[in-house]
Amino acid sequence: MPIAKVECVRSMLYTPLFTVDKEQLLWQECLCDLQSIAPDMAYYESDAITIEWDQSIEAVVMDWHSFASGDAYRNALEKGLDLVEEKGATNWLADLRDLGTVTQDDQEWTQEEWHPRAFDTTLSNIAVLQPESVVANMSVDDLVEEFGSNDNKSRIFSDRDEAESWLKAR
Image (tube, rainbow, N blue to C red; front, side, top):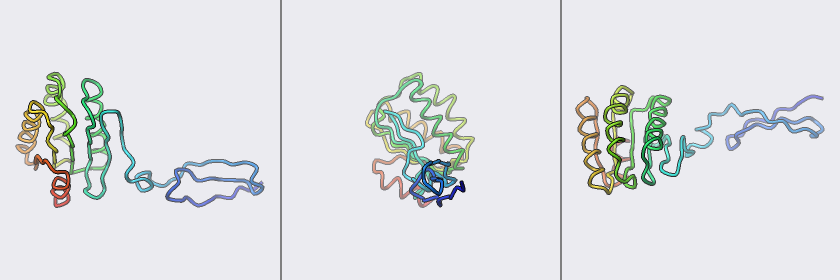
């Protein structure tokens, strides 16, 4: 029996293929780019964080929802860098308002392991929404100062719209 192909519809993840008598339904992966189908779909999501690509500001966006430490914290930062590399991103928006205080071990790992790799990517602009914690603010200040000393631009914001506008202008 001949098989008729149904055109890929942007709202579908799969293209149905069916026989003329419609007795059998087959599914073939749609070749549409997943980001064009669902641009607001998260690249990575956990209880503590959502990471996504925001095309409107051409940025990797990391929205922290709660405290994370150890593997959960580090894996999230690694996923963020993966998305930077995948997109060739120059902009990064980190919403740290709900992150809480980062543990000393994680601060050291971030500074010694993650920062050098982040600085070696295509990133050139970092907008940070300031966390509530005074201790967390100190590590954010260090990051912004260190990143800015590498011929990059970074700023701390308290308002998300201002941070997004700043990145759009880059």
